[in-house]
Image (cartoon, rainbow, N blue to C red):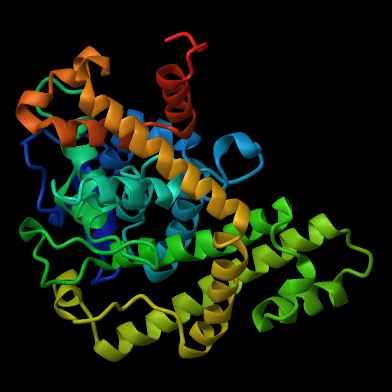
Length: 384
């Protein structure tokens, strides 16, 4: 049986000096006896996978609402894709892949139904009551809302995984400043890897879903250098490839060249900075895990293209505004008559306040559950 001592020996031998070792963790808020043959981060990963909030990601929107088709990415499939990309990068950089995986699997636990439109609606509703941010909500989920253990609230995750949730940042996510997590310090390289893996996953997989849905035309993609160059290489290599396989090969290649560039550029930066410990990483005033300047130049037009042709497509915008109306109406009806909330939710009103409890309840809903609740509350012919 692998022991904690052997896990420590393995990490010291195979992980880089700048990696976050499990035996150097700041630990948990509530003291626990650690597992005999799993590291603290492996145990965190398993707690996340088995929690209710993780399962609900299966029916939460990425771009396309769940009922629009069963091909499109959901928050769960996106999370798994982020985890896979992040682990690949972590292994190549000799980082702690267990910590990376735990952060990746937890990074979207605080997301609302209906994607970012749901988050925007709750943030607007809660503007006088602390607002809403899905990173903070993710921390609230793992620290308080998950109820599984008699000894403590939440999942009692390690400090480093919780920091990774709070300090997660990307084009759609902003890092939250909480005193507990030393906001003046940069996050671990493991957290930084998840941030970039998140961007790689949603850029390329949203592109895939956009083409499949017909909202993005393949001929429009030819305007993008990064797409066009790969498309020509695929066409030269496979003379009679069908369109579905061709699309898959292009998306796969897009991810590959970005991951490869990221690893090479990050290794170059690490050597330049002569990093030898995770403590040194936290003192650097900018992110170390990054693309090269050439790759950034190629990615910028791709991201602009997605914004203009997918995220701002009239069908996506219509669904987004419809979703906001659902959220606001549900919030209003629960506030006006909280007796309509389930009994176990009502119990928390005295300690957490009406607005925050209703916010938690709605944020935890799947797309499907939110739509069903809306029909039950507003359709006179629907059974309650």
